[in-house]
Length: 226
Image (cartoon, rainbow, N blue to C red; front, side, top):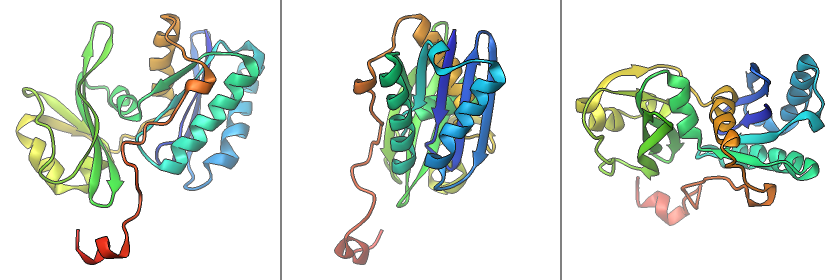
């Protein structure tokens, strides 16, 4: 199976190519430059593997939540390729990719959503892949769903940014996976399994997962406080 995946929900611009059983990855922390770097990174990986776009069986992208601009860029890039080549698309939640990258079996994931909030989810490894014990959601202090049981590991910038999130989950946590971000390698691994099960969707049906419908507060909201 040949599959191209991208992850652009954070400052990390990440591209991965599964070529048969080999995984090729290229990534760089380049805030606000995802749009200009995705295509040359993908082209370089294809050249490294000796493939051309028509050799690809499908495409995948980290659908968010995360940077609104980043996930729109990643989704649009993959949609364009998939539409042109008439190939299926696998959207992968970025918080699930974060769980995959952690290496743990029970993972509470969180990304800094700015404005004093976090994108949060909890995943447990099962025989057929990750099970979402808490589906991706936007949380603020006092709004964190309780983790079921103990033995969870935390991962992501949300836990590193917010004391209130760490404190709310502390009783259920066994440790923290530091400096882990969602990457295209994890997206490719998850997507390959789903593509093999025939779970791809049409390019025109692919969409980002935002969770928040606004990114800025009005003057009155700012004056009213946090």
